Amino acid sequence: MKYGIYYAYWERQWGGDYIKYVKKAAALGFDILEISCAQLADMKEEDIQTFAQAAKDSGLILTGGYGPKASENISSSDPAVVSHAMDFWERTFAVLQKLNITLVGGGIYSYWPVDYSAPFNKAADLDRSVKNMRLLARKAASYGITLGMEALNRFEGYLINTAEECIAYVKAVDEPNIKVMLDTFHMNIEEDSLSDAIRSAGSYLGHFHIGEPNRRPPRKQSRMDWPAIGRALNDIHYMGAVVMEPFVLQGGQVGEDIKVWRDISRGASEQDLDEEARTSVRFIREVFA
Image (cartoon, rainbow, N blue to C red):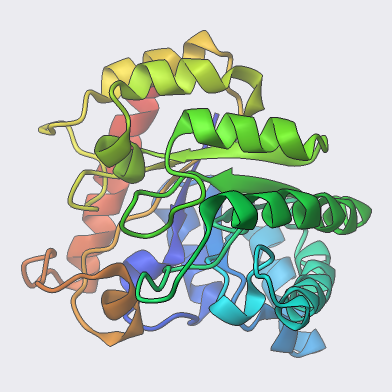
């Protein structure tokens, strides 16, 4: 397995100085830096090349994550929205390829976060999502990209909440580059057993996010049974990415979207955040080995 961290651990706004985080992630002992797909299609060519070279020089793998806007919802009943979503991904895939990113995960099958004040029909939305995902999968495949369907908790999405639903969705799409993506934060809310959910995904599991129930980096003193989670991953011979996705900073667009209404970091400096991440990845490497 390869171990990574999502750049927004250090950010209050989506986006940022990715080259800084490439260097930081490598220095802290990570193999992977995960970035957001937001605004990638608007990056200048020279910036794309500089970023790609920085990752290569640092020996880091880049992966992508994204929660599509409502205007990028492939399950929408509005053909114009679906068309806009497909165009967004076509432009984004081209940049991802230049960055040597071969895996993107998130609630790609719908939009995020869901507006529950708007009416929805889960069965109809799911049917459209599956059909349109087949088309999106083929676009992604032409760029050498695999897409991870992230099972999200009920408060953030309604189409796929559990590993069982995610497996059924992936099987329905039936494209080789469409995989199950699980996240311990969401699983802690929705699954009866995190270990059983992982084992049920088996070879369909293509991406894995980790974090504490309050979204801090994984730690030894935890309510999460990290050794059991590691055993389950080893039982299915998972060799993919394990990316921690901590959100601990209050404020900004990141804090608002993730619903961080208090300073979970407890006034931590950037150096403090660095040290917690360094300690966390060492711990996870040990217990998942």
